[in-house]
Length: 477
Image (cartoon, rainbow, N blue to C red):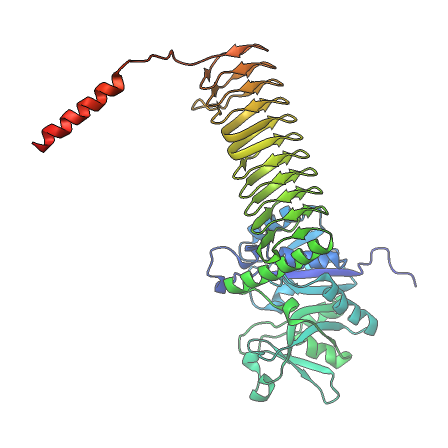
């Protein structure tokens, strides 16, 4: 018989309702970030990559914040949310998702929301093991030399999974078992809901354990145990575990980038958010951090200690050491930034633009080949092509209430230490003499001088020195 067109081959439930008290935080555990994403994003992403649709996230503590964070991070994903108002165990949490899975009649994967290292490949192995065996349940196990804190898998005399016993309920003989529950399941929907209705709370913690499904499945047809790498199944419960998981994710990302043709001079000193895109033949020096929606084109070089947030770089851009791009900002091909430049939101730098040391831009557009090589602030400015901005130049864009725009035409030359008081326009090819304060428009091709008249007082320095000498002499007597 052909499958029903409404049949769901795989759905998923991600358990993300807990507070995470060991994090010692006012923020729910699953909202703590790794690689620019909330912790719960990773198992949700693994479920989606494994083909699950829909994915139901069970929320509880800070439910609205968790839902908002995941919807923002996965705006087009087939996500649904279920609320577990009172946390009474893992089986109780999955039951909370039943309404959101009404009509789902295929397999349902169940994941923990604090397992960021789980891969979709491993999840698929667990799903396929149940499918191949036609068992009501498959689940992941891992073998640990130190199994403390985990539920132990008890097998029958034929070696088949019989039940999982939580550590607080285990006998001394059961506690020495090294094969433990990894917290990842795949169940037939019909079996799952019938079994969960029968789960009780007669145990040391008075909770409804999802692990009871193993014994229930064994009464019908043996559940299938799939051994997985402990690293993938490890959960995050405190800040140390969060940091260790982050290091693993960064090592994975660095390895993938290098295999794709990116040079990382020191992979151990490289931080990169999920979602950042880096083309081949990019060279990244030590200590670089790439965040947000950053995209780096081919043949760029990112200097040591630089931080790029929501930055879009065209081909061949050079970012010299300790430059900060705090976007959204775009940088044209062959541009050169830094060292120690700061590019703020709304900046658009054209092809071949140069920004040097201690130059700051904000909501500024610089045309092709324009340069500001030293100690300048360019805010709320539209600057044409081939413009030279001298050292110490600033655009005075704020009057205490409103921001105003400075416009500089193609080929203009702005002398050092100029103050451009917005709103003001400087025409194409115009010159502004060094040290000028410009408050009025400068016509194209003109020279603007806005200095105070120089006055030289002959002999003033000699008289000052004599007065100082006389004063010191009187103080000694």
